[in-house]
Amino acid sequence: MKQKYKSAETSVNSSKLPAIVHIWDDHIISGLSILDYGCGKFRNTERFLTAKGFRYFGYDPFNVETIVNRLVLAKQDYHYAILSNVLNVIAERAVRHEILWDVKKHLGEGGTLYIKIYEGNKSGVMKVNEKKNSCQLNRKTSDYIPEVEAVFGEENVKERWINGIHVIEATKEVK
Image (cartoon, rainbow, N blue to C red; front, side, top):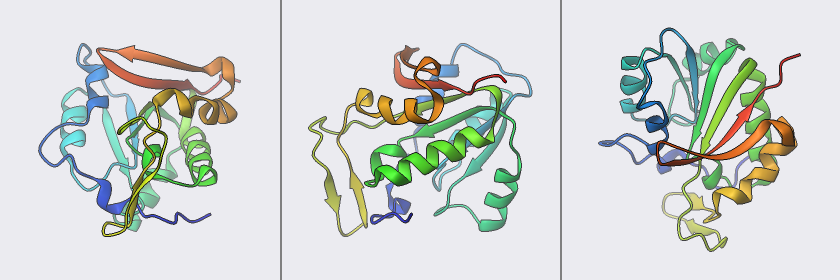
């Protein structure tokens, strides 16, 4: 399924870190892998997380070279994954569903996905920016939980605050 509005121009954190990385402020991670799915065009998240000790892998269909994306998605046992302000710029529920399944496929057993949603004005009314060929859904974080539960299972999904950051946490079951 294709996106009506591309999210290539929604990457805006050129000079500051996205909020999601602060869930690891109190931790030094040594050698664990993290998939930044929809990483955007800026590398500040990569620099921060590698300084924390992560083995960082960024994937983005619009802002990363195809060969790099293929290499990143060849790995299927990530310890962690993040979706930072990704789901809230995709109008089609089916595309969001595909992304969640793809991330789950690339997590190792017991791997954890953290999802940060930019809630906009929280109205639930989508705003379209034709000039940037993008949209903002303006939905609350909790509105996405049923979509995440449909992929990861209700028992594996939690809405949490970690270090002041509002996230959805989804864990891939251990077989």
